[in-house]
Image (cartoon, rainbow, N blue to C red):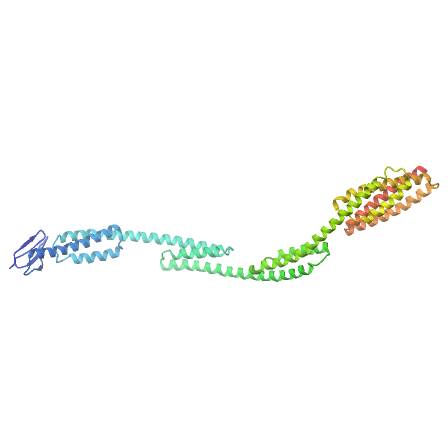
Length: 411
């Protein structure tokens, strides 16, 4: 026999029977034979403390939302099974009451989880619908580089979204996949076509380079310069060649042009220097010619003029900027001598009237002939010939005016 021991929620009797007090009365939960009853009470209260800890933990997890509702329901049933009929000493009914209170919390968590899941599903559906709409718009576009990057971004975004109900998810995925396939096929076709165009451009440019290199040694400056302009237009029209050869082709084409234009520039520089030297000679001749005015000795002026005129023609061309000034000044001297000669001729010729009439006829015929030549030069686009004939025509017309005046004086 052992001594009896008491506890607020149970006791150990003298025979070692351990009881827990419940609302319906005492319930035998074990035996403690030959030992200290206090140790029995301590053992069974520790068991109760363990159960209470399980209930506390479940309450906290449900309150914090760290356990899924289904897992919480399973845990709740498991703990209830442990508490009901438990061989433990304590307020077991209180634990069951607390467990009963957790049932609605599990239902609330389940409902909350359902609402959140539906909301996520709706958000996922909206996001995937948006992705599909953008993909279908991209599929018909021509942004071949940014479009491909955007499709990759959309795919990664799709992967991060929750799955929808199978029928909805499959339908949206089929549209997205079809759009991506359409875009990929069009993109490949575009780059294949572009590659073919670049290859054809490379072939065209090889031919242009061959002609440019063949022309690089030409000294026919005007026509060859024009041909190089034509080649450049054809080069631009051909479009870009493949990237790995475009720069090399351009360098070859440019190098051929540089050879020609460097030679042309050198020749022009030499020609400019020659024209400047010619201008110095003609400037001296102008000074010599203008010194003849006013005319005091017509015979001496004629002889000097003939010498100056021969040397003027032999001196050659001058820079374009000086042509108009030099020609104007030399023609002024020429006209003065011609006018003086005409006056002298009129004064000394005994058959002035007859000669004047004959001169008028000859000048009119010469003017008509010159006008015909001038019309032809204009039609041919020969600007140099047009200038020469225009000056000649003006001179002959001036002589004709003088001849007519002279004839009228003898009438």
